[in-house]
Length: 219
Image (tube, rainbow, N blue to C red; front, top):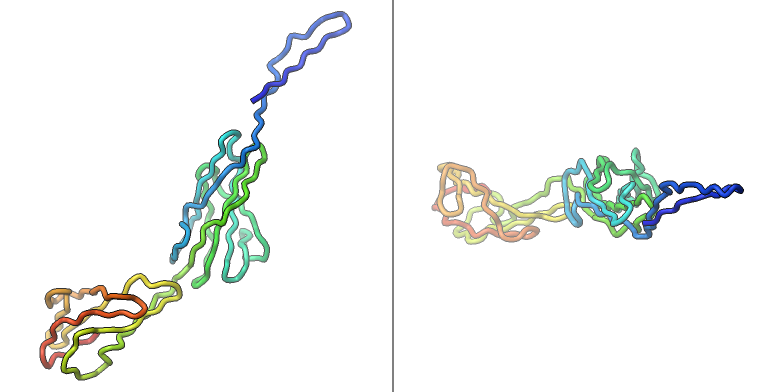
């Protein structure tokens, strides 16, 4: 930090009493910022507020901006619509900042970058940002064995397949005895519906319980 003062002298030799002067700080350090919501690499089904933080060691942050990129369509959000070419949008706040998220499209991949500007005019070079997938469509699954309406002598393993636009978290199986309407609860049969975790996702299996003779079991 520096101070500059001035002092004048007239032709009669009178010397001005110097004043307070002006102070200033030389700041060439670049501020930093980051996106904290959404986190990088997630698949989500809703996002209403984008948020993050920023910091500067000397002069302080004056502005944080973000760029919202739809990687599936190669477009940026300009505050109203999606357009070609990068668009920087002003966030609300500085140290902790937010931005109201636009509408996202199911099945698309997005990336959000941030950049901060300090009061000295230093502008951050943005990093790679945070990428995420937007998924509002339910996954699907089918039982492939046993086949529907089949008659079996024995059954040791139940199997099937499942799919999703992005990634599957888990597959569960419900087994009901249609004769007495009891459900398999992972160790015993009971009246309450229980979803049992299968092994695997895209191709999954479940170890079958002991079935009673002449009972019908929907899966």
